[in-house]
Length: 232
Length: 232
DNA sequence: TCAATAGTGTCTGTTAGACATTATGGA
DNA sequence: TCCATAATGTCTAACAGACACTATTGA
Image (cartoon, rainbow over all chains, first blue to last red; front, side):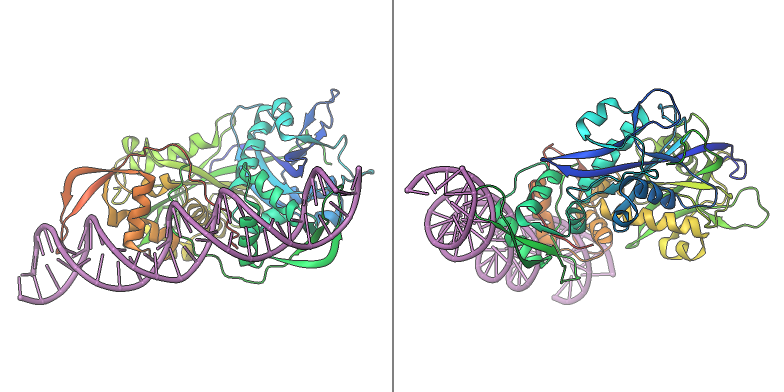
């Protein structure tokens, strides 16, 4: 066992993956690389600091992306910390990746404190242009998100305070990667008592207007399901 | 957005949480703190090194714990990287925690390369005596493990190559934290075609001897389950 | 023979998904 | 009037859990 007291000093970066739904797929927030001359697209990143929790640094990046008010109730979770030789834009020895979820139709912050060159990009395209280490973090972030689908709250973090049931179903279909049965979906939702109808309706193009709902979980107990031997 | 190019140097440790089932609960591997005079119990830890993947460092710790041969097919996954002010035995600024799963009845390595003072301790007791940062990693590790229950393979990582179905069910009951129905459990297992019977039987005390099974997944497709609105 | 554990067959209530139907707006 | 989408009711096959039973060992 190597001595834990001897520990070489490394540069540690906090990288942020902000995801939001758009048009049936996921978008990720990319920024223009700061400092360098070339305008390379990168994940928002900031150096870690001694004595400050990594979460704090990540939260600051979220604020820079969407503004202080919006950032307050953003879901944020660490994805992975990656070391090794993979390329990183800031040259960090270790990159700690965080995942944040932005509701549908979230506007990016503007102004002096905002991230330079920030824009939504499809995950598919981002994976093609990001440096290797950040691509690995993006992959890990989307995998983590899909793993959290069963935790009902994350789906609602991808929606504004009020939404239609069709929008909610589309979120689940996006996260699960497959179509769902409408009646069955709504029955399960009814049983879980997670949403509460408002008295507002929204009409989009043709068809009957949809009622708007709000996330308002009533039951606090988890569902006891049977053992499922799913394969990875 | 702070400049990503400026990044202060931090000490980074890799901490290892090895879990194994014993007597209906989980045990974690603790070691005696190296270097210091006091014999404090800590998670096995090693400093991260520039250019070397964190996984490599974690894998080396696993080898020190159980020996090279055993360690080869150990499941290993990163749990979290924690910075901030919480106490860490090696004084690291950032601790990257890894979770490894040891099969039932795993013997610890002995000899010069082994971890000093390594011993299995119940998770309950370990949580009471570990330094704050390592306690947080242990909590995150057990949470991660329970979240992975649906990925059938992790349950089998907690068992030796051959096992009885009662042992397998006990693993699931341990991970899920509740009793399961025997007939239903075996029916689901049958349907998933994950295990294959051997022609060996094991008799333990009274009662009918149990047939030994081997993990041998036949189907590669995942089960398509319905949407479940579980609460956290 | 008794106790204890392994392993299996049958029944029933629940539910996911299929299908069909009504409701209500815009084009 | 069509057409598109929302919302809901009914049916069925699958299945989780309960219960009961047989099988096989050690004490």
